[in-house]
Image (cartoon, rainbow over all chains, first blue to last red; front, side, top):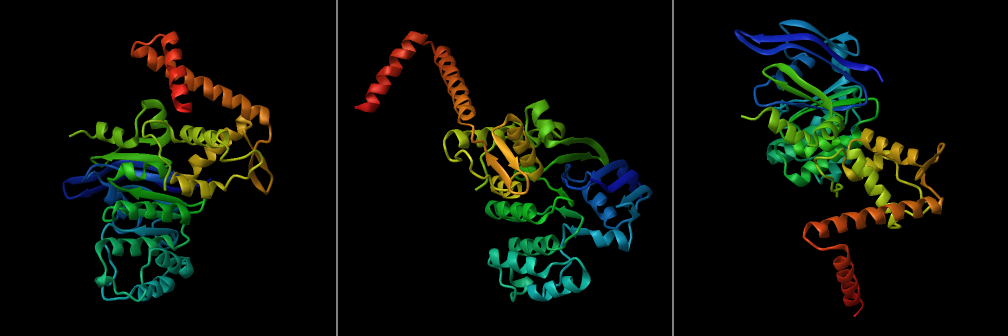
Length: 232
Length: 123
C-alpha cells in the first residue's frame, strides 16, 4: 500500500467565499472512498483541484508524490459532474479519441461494457437519453487503467437497476492497487462498496472513518449518520 | 442480485453469517471451492476488501481453509460443521422462546403449542 493522494492545508477562496478551508487528507492505494457532503460543501472544488482544473489559494497537494501536472493527470481518471464530450460524435469516435489521448485506455474493455449494456457504438451521443450518456461516460472513465479514479456524481441520473450495474462496473474494473473517490448524495446506494468515507462541510473535513467502524460503533448506516450529522 | 444486508450492522459480520448459513444448509458442501474474493464481492455488491475480511474471519474460525495457489475451500471437518449447526439451532430456539415469553407464554405452554403445530404439519 502506498499513498496515492495527499493534501496538506488545502485552501481555496473564490473572492470572499472560502470553498475549501485547510483541508488535509491522505488516500492510500486499494481503497474505495466516498466523498460525502451537502450541496456547496466543497466536494467538486476539491475534485477539480485534484484534476488541475482549479489551483488552490494555498496549501499543498500531491498525487503519487508529484505535484498536479501532466504526470499526475496520466494516472488519474476523472468523471466530471458535467460532460465535456462533443454530442455530435458517435460513441466509437469518442473511444478513438480516448485511445489516442490516454496511453492506459483499454479499448476492448470499453467495447465489452458497451455490448453488455446493449449500447450501439455507432449511435451519436446526442441521440441518447441522459442515463445512457452517463453510462457511456462512466465506461470511458473506467476503461482506463488508472491508479486513481475520481467519479463526481456517477449515479445521479440513472435508474436503480442501472445503478446496480454501474456499481458492478466499478467493482469489476478497479484493481486492488488502484483507488476510487466517489462523490455522491446517494449514499445508501453505494455505501456497501465503500471502504472509507470523508464527510465534508463548509469546506472543512468533518469526519473520516471506515464504513465498518461507523456501523460497529454507532450501529447505524453511513446514510443514517449523514442525515444526523447534516440535519437541516 | 446484490445480497440483502442490514444497513445498521457491520457488513463483514453479515457476510460471515451468510456464508456460515450456506454451509449449514448444504449449499456449500464440505470440500467445495469458494468463488474468488472478487467474484463474491461482485455477487454481493460489496467492497472487495470487506469480502476479504469476512473470508479471513471464516478462515480464522477454521470453517474455510486456503490452499496455496488454488483458492479457498469449505472445511471437510464434519464435526466442526455439526457443532456450528447445534450452536445455530440453540440460538434460534433461545430467540424463539424469548419472543414467546415476551407475549406471555410459559415454556410449557410454548412446548405444547409446538407439538400441536408439528402434528398439524404432519396431517
